[in-house]
Length: 191
Image (cartoon, rainbow, N blue to C red; front, side, top):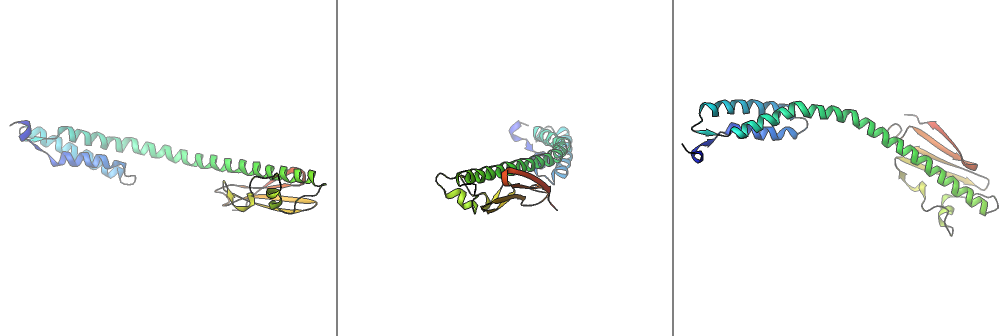
């Protein structure tokens, strides 16, 4: 019988399809096992009926993809389980560093304002952003920046700016405070 008259075994096709489905995260192991079983059965049937059946390459591909699903996908999942907490911690550290830098920026702006205004501090952050030239390019107390919210209290003799994490333990673990003359302090936030 010629190659064009041979029938492609449906199990070989199904093995390849299930092998491709290993990319579905939760179902990858059952699909991988199914791909291997169908591939082996298809190879046996094709071997015993070489004259009428084809699809050996499809079955082998399904078996290989099933093997990859059983061996490599769990390894990748374990590596991701190790890496994700480290990435989240790095993001939190970056947010905390940005919070301290922003407080230093607010403090520098307030001190510069006081130096130009006979030692008197501004009455609000708004005063630092609306002067010509402005002491601050933006009002940091109007939103959340890298997981931190900022607030400032001013009077003519003193100021205090606070950076608190939006979600304690998730976006940051410290509350930072800067006071007159740039004194920066930190405390742990309560969960």
